[in-house]
Length: 268
Image (cartoon, rainbow, N blue to C red):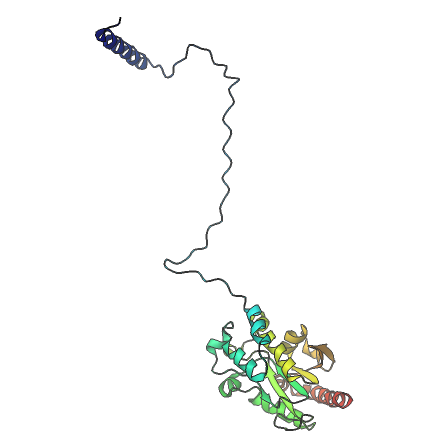
């Protein structure tokens, strides 16, 4: 029987032999049974790392708000307006358009809602923004004289003689710049509902931007005087009065368009 002394001796001998082998440069040990290295399967390669899209940076302590579809919201708010007062209130409560923050007043409409003719311009200017009414500056004064020449006006009480006037945009763009497509897209649902509630016999579009918004077309010198159909009604594009102030020679074409409007109203 092996004594404890012999067991301790064998351990020390084995350790001394191992340390000697390490000093001689031995780096691995071979077992008693041979190993077929060709039969050993190589380890499966690691799958390539899929690059991850960097997360959108969020300021510390700030909760990112979900993006709002302002066009869909405008459609919902406009459709819920039962009358013109409700539409004005809905437009005033709409927060999707940045123009509202820089404007003094909401420019909704002017004239007789029972009018057979509804005039749509592009956007308020400085005078309109100050007074809260469309077409009240020099261009508005010219517009009044133009329609007065065919016996029509915004102050008329009879629907056959009356005008109802609005704009595509109800707030003044900074420095009277042109409306951009995003602004027009989010405010057109209110314009469409406006037309539905007023239900005019004819729409008159003043200038390029109104034609682009309602008809999807530009080129007022080509479009003016040519009857179109939009929003379920006859549409007559005309030169904007501001254009006529800069180009007085075009007043002849504007007069021809007014006569065409007068003739169309007789036939309706």
